[in-house]
Image 1 (cartoon, rainbow, N blue to C red):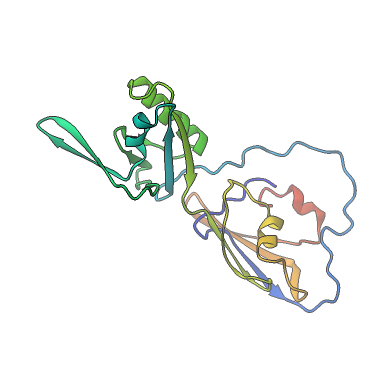
Image 2 (cartoon, one colour; image 1 turned 135 degrees about the vertical axis):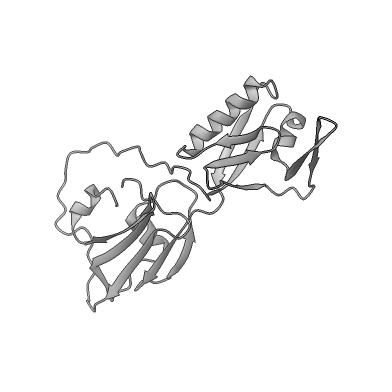
Length: 214
């Protein structure tokens, strides 16, 4: 399905109860001509997102200062670097202006970028400043989550590692609706661009596959 913007518990599925003996999804679905799935499903970074950023290089010593939980101090005009030895990845929080502070590199504007776009921007910054000639940057969201509540086998909060997930994927992670779940009245709550919207789905209707919220 198209992008399902679900992070930090913003995507919440609610299902009500109705007794039924047999369960069918996508009823009366007919074969159709294959069509290209939209590829606009990458999550765009926004203020207060939490990211892990790893810089790799053929020379690990050159990349190490970018990766440690670090701090910069200015002493007599010189920048000094100190890092922790716990080996944990640093988690960076995007500020309310859509910027992050990176060790050595400094401030980077990332609001509205995808992970890949931000990675390329950081790589170019490192390369252009002559810090590392072959940087490879890997970025992950630190806490992309969604919640499933209601008449499902395992209600709760779930983490995902990819940018997009379908409605059926989310329900499957929660163990699917129980026999009592009302499949024609599933609600998705989404928050995007400062607005909260609620969308209702009939899981028996094959037309949901064309929905931008599927």
